[in-house]
Image 1: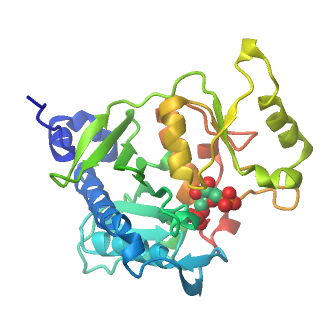
Image 2: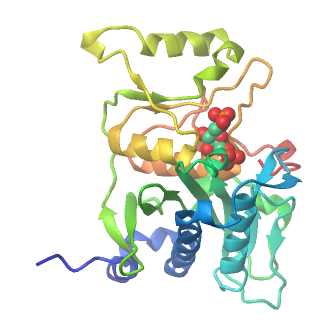
Image 3: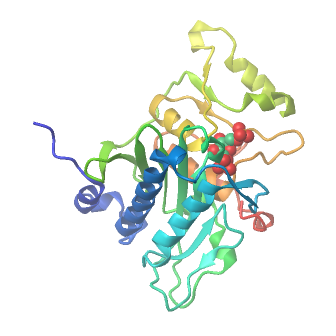
Amino acid sequence: MSKFPLTLGRFLAENQASYRGAGDGFPSLITQVGLVGKVIAQDLRRAGLLDIQGTTGDTNVQGETVKKLDAIANDAFVNAFQHSGSVCALASEEMEQPIVLPGNWPQGRYILLFDPLDGSSNTDNNMPLGAIFSVIKHDRTDRLPTDDELIRRGTEQVAAGYLLYGSSTMLVYTVGQGVYGFTLDPGIGEYVLSHERMTIPEKGKVYSTNEGNYNKWPAGTKKYLDSLKVIDKATGRPYSTRYTGCLVADVHRLLLGGGIYLYPGETDKPEGKLRLLYEANPLAFVVEQAGGKASTGTSRIMEVENPRNCTSEYR
Ligand code: AFP
């Protein structure tokens, strides 16, 4: 007889201690994230048959071409959350300005920052995609958050995680008490606990990076990368390369099998590509909670002071 599935809803009901740090509103918030995942996964399963591939013709605030699926996924998050009563503000990699909910709308104490569709260069080739979310709290009840209050250090996150649209759809999150992974069972339309307390193996065999940029990297980065390819049985080298172009998928592989992901700064672009608020901070929280390390190369990602000069782009 098959085991009765431990659904996300039942897991949250039975394990209140597992989200206490994030507060009582967390089950409702994570359920909404899961709903977005179901809606988008359904579209992705039929992507080649629907008019949802290709670009919208617009450029986003990061200066990148907007894919139709970027816009669809962003709308899904906004629609799921703006009347949910879970949040008071939303900020997305795809939106020029954050949405601070009008005072007379249902309000929650959370602020949700998200990358609605991670790895969008994969949209037209049936490759993995993801979404990343970061949750911070707005503790004042007398007024809504200002734009400045949306930009915090990673250590202030109360929850973070991702949706992975791969051969199956997964919802993975942490509230600072370990990392939990749920797989969407399409037969019953529920997320079922599949990965309890995900822990990164101490030693991995894979590095994941866009090595096409090698000649743009500073000498130290090149040297490090070269060292991963040295043949040395004692230290388990050389590493293998695996790179999907979807950060969520590459980080998920590392959570399960260990290894290294890097998107180095370039000589002419030392800050690199990954966005601190929408990508690096939330995944750093997950990685640390799974026993790994997340570094800028010189310091802990989650301790990077969110520089005010990032706000024009909401990086
Ligand atoms: P998008 O979400 O804008 O597609 O960016 C994806 C991403 O930030 C991350 O998911 C990938 O690891 C990385 O960019 C891929 O960038 P390259 O195409 O430059 O390798």
